Image (cartoon, rainbow, N blue to C red; front, side, top):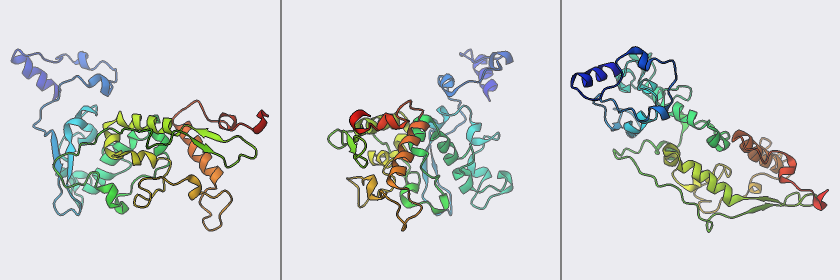
Length: 290
């Protein structure tokens, strides 16, 4: 495909890419950033594709094909070596051409580099994302709820444009003082607004994150992970609302408050490769300075 385009342009006296093998096959692995200025190959592919599977239960998906082209190294990242559309090899039941992988699995497999969900899951493993996503279980397509599925399966041919998040100090508390062990230690002062603002900035830098997070409430759920949208739409619950100070025999699998804080906070810091805080004294100052 590449060479044919180069030859075609050369014959028409247009600016063309390399014709010699050694000019491309240098042995160096190109990154997406290095490839971003290479012109988009024209194969009559749409800029926006509306994926609507006949007899499927879910609504159609508006897919920004042009955006995904720019963010993958090659068309084969999705289309395998055939470069055919997904539905030519995959259907609802699965067929021989697609290795009997049905269309549901082709789009939603968590373990495939070529599926939508598999690719997006890989993005969440980046250090700037894994702080929250480490605690979020992969979405199981078979049992997913309407709220999750509808982010893609909207049935609309136009792609929803989501504005970047704006974090207001009037809506997000500046600082949170954690006082549950104040008999021995001074209260832990958590820079709440600073943390939320930083997470929002990270999200805003990614078109994928901005689209799927949708609003600031999703960022809040990174820590306040059991919030119920209907009941707590405006105010996220405190950690102690769910995690008791002492062991609760009614919910033995639920961590105590101390474990919840340490498991959530320290794991996030380690996964995001933050230098501090990681040790006890980074957060806890014993009363009297001893």
